[in-house]
Image (tube, rainbow, N blue to C red; front, side, top):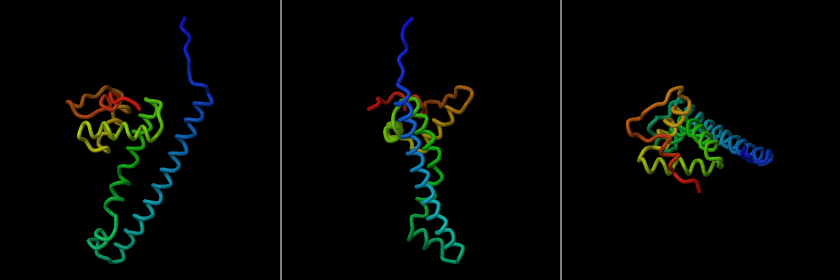
Length: 139
């Protein structure tokens, strides 16, 4: 019977700790962005014209980032598990697949999460999918 080799528990624990620390850092960045967005919303409610606020702040970018950040983080987690890589390398895989397929990162991330969460295999009619992410070589 062939011997199955696996990573030492300390290596796995180390990888999990790195992933946890990255998640915590991302959660803190998310909270900072949320606080900035709340300040902007409060300014809008106080009567400052929305056009002026949008022009003078990063409101639109923050709002878009807040909406897409969770699904991108989920996709990174999936790729980290599949490729046994760190968060930066997982994002790089996602970014390269996005560029290769000419699909926005958040759209590709949504598809990846949907496919992994789906109980049945899905076909995308040739659209970007997890296969494109998997086909990219790891660094």
